[in-house]
Image 1 (cartoon, rainbow, N blue to C red):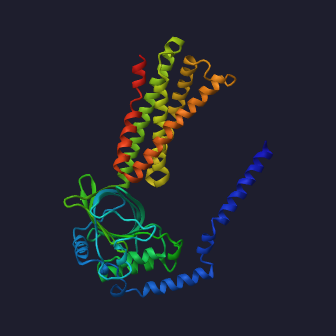
Image 2 (image 1 turned 90 degrees about the vertical axis):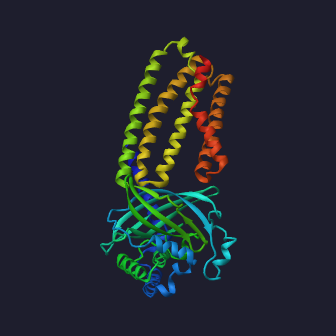
Image 3 (image 1 turned 45 degrees about the horizontal axis):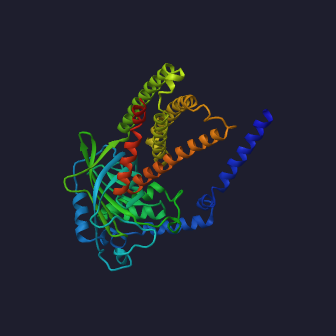
Length: 436
């Protein structure tokens, strides 16, 4: 036994070493010992330090009305020294525009290159944003990172954020891209609305990176797609933080503006953790209560006569419902991580506790109502088992696809299908009523 454990440990160690070495070619290419990497960094820093607002600003390429809206949003306001780290949600209206200069970007106003995607003109959608903040060399400015999810009917994209937050006037300038690269930092600086902010941002990133690009890839290795400048003005609200936001893509010519009279509402990470912890405790208490009631029901229906009056369809629908809950919580946990990890504990507790009890009870009921259903030596029993699996996956797979379509597209059809799915799954008590 010890020899087997030692062999398995050695195999896992070798496998881990292989993953570390082959993680790969990109990891080796990004190391600072590579001459090619050092040459790239040297060229990058020389070009970065020579940048100027007059020659490198992308803000000046925006139409006059877009520039005026951004400047009005970034006007000096009350100081906001609170951290803007948190989760935000808001609405937007999309407007396509023609850039200042008739260059190659302007030719994309009608047809975008392959792999580029933008919201339809005059469409509406919602924004979900997660922000993290850390100090910079300037006490009045914080470095911002995170991600933003832009979604409307027929449009769904998740982007990575970088930018700066000025505490002195409560404003932030962010840049969102499909994948971080060495160009991202350049684009953050180029998004600044004034030459003073341009020089300040360039100096902050110059000192922060310290002459090293760390794990940044070269621009040609990054994913192509629409990138966005995000201009925000923050302020306090009774329920947390609120902001006005203006999101504009200078390479896809689309403006996403917060509707008049509305705000992007946010909640801090600390408060969100309190909410998710409260959610976890409440959910766990309800699951324990439900498990206790089910256990009492199992003890009260120990006779064949009592079990024959329990609908196995109700139990099967509950098992499928908990599987859907498990899938949706797991998606939130694995896709976003961080503060969403609490959902992982919820789904594991719900799935293991509830499914183990419901499936045990389902098997007991089924054996009483169909004694030959689990006889693998009997042809009818084998057909019965096959029928059980076919019915389970026939219900589960379309439901999973419906959930995916609802999250990904938010189309009217997916909304109707999601409503039908939820209504059907939460009607698990109907078969029991019919049987009684």
